[in-house]
Image 1 (cartoon, rainbow, N blue to C red):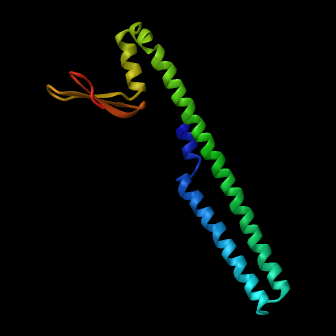
Image 2 (cartoon, rainbow, N blue to C red):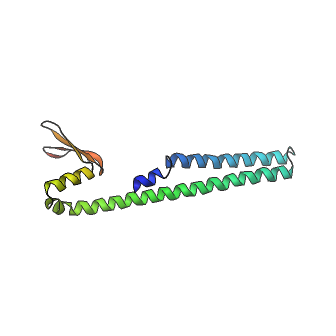
Image 3 (cartoon, rainbow, N blue to C red):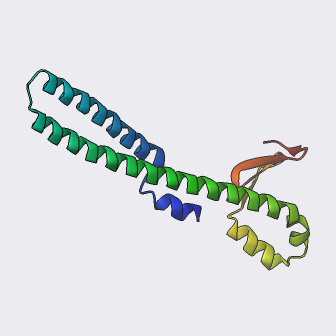
Length: 144
């Protein structure tokens, strides 16, 4: 679900949000420039109204896009939180459940979790998978 949500964002959320925030800053700058031109009499009130109207449309679009991106970010954060809670739940019940599995079921579970174990001679085991960053276990216990 998290992967689907990420794909639905069409790119990097933070980068897209920054682009729309930059667009809002640009709109503010242009608005000030048009007002200065009108004060100096370089453009008419009608031209000012037209330019400000276009800028307001751009502002509204940028704010809508930012709201959409923020909603997507919140949804992704909620999914990540749900994932963490779910993993904690399964971690609590895993020892009993794993003991009851036959070897084929163990293999299928490890494959679903994309668990990879690399055995370093005489030193550590390096374990990685969908549960997060890898960890190393020495013959004395957990290393990192």
